[in-house]
Length: 403
Image (cartoon, rainbow, N blue to C red; front, side, top):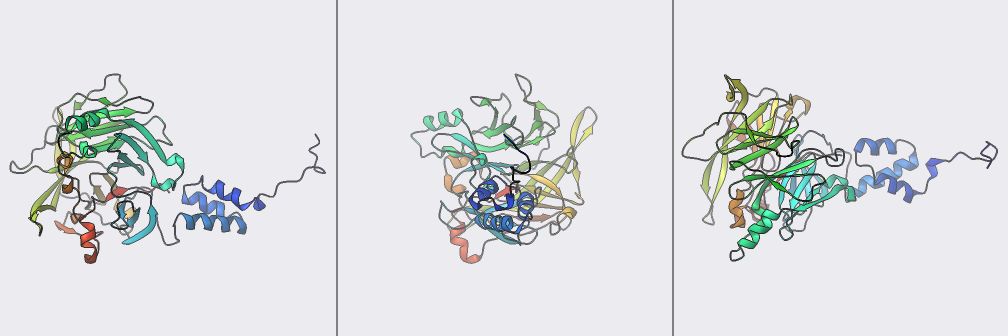
């Protein structure tokens, strides 16, 4: 076959059929890639604009890959999608992401949400920024311990999706196929893990009462009720929880809410302790309201690591909540307040397995705590006209966009 210049015509890629160009674009999930695609020529720009309109992305929307956004409901219908709330500009981004608010979300990591099905107890990793592409959904094996709990409590009106308190993903499962998931589960808040390729979950032996969990510096790090820190490396065949710090006891008359956060340097670990008060509401129940935070840095004291209280975190801003916790450099994100802690409402833990309505109240306990001023401001707060709708919603979710 003769491929000489006289018989071979160079392809004119600009005039590929629009349906083919559109299919190619559905494989792009980074805005930078879409912009580069649209800059090739006028025709490709037109196709790119159509794709952005399909994704509900507008020119005034700003996404930062390390800055969390709030995933919020769009209406009071359980099957309704969610929108994003941008903290720096206080704007709601009407993306209508396919994340129904009545689906139990047990974690948010690297832009991926972790869900549990209340019937099959199968866990699902879901990235809403894949906009429906099958690459954004990964099925994990069912968690048999939750199934056993459901069967043992058949005589009760039990909500087994709350058997799992929190789940954490080690890395992006698409870019790092050798990922792992660890979760806190059950009345005694024990740990279990799954490594990609495993056929089932493995439960860890330990003391239980784990209250928060992150993945940091190549291993999972957990903190318990008393503020003691543990690490777990899943590389060995028989992973164990190892204590690396002394406890950090709080007031004897209360049970503080604790979070563990990795500082901006990727090495230092912070323990964030939330203080709250309980207030009566009109229906005769009570709700909790955050009144302050204390921050501690892990430091070495003699033979063991100990916790050192910080009066300031400088240019850092912390984000804490059941779904996700992180630390960012405030000066890198105009509009983010330095020396502050952004927080969301939390689930009420395992108790919701027996009393689901504890989770579904208006999420008024969300805001930003200013460390120097020792005061709380609101960030996203629904309009007063929406109060009745908001009482039926679970806590909002921190999520870092991957677009």
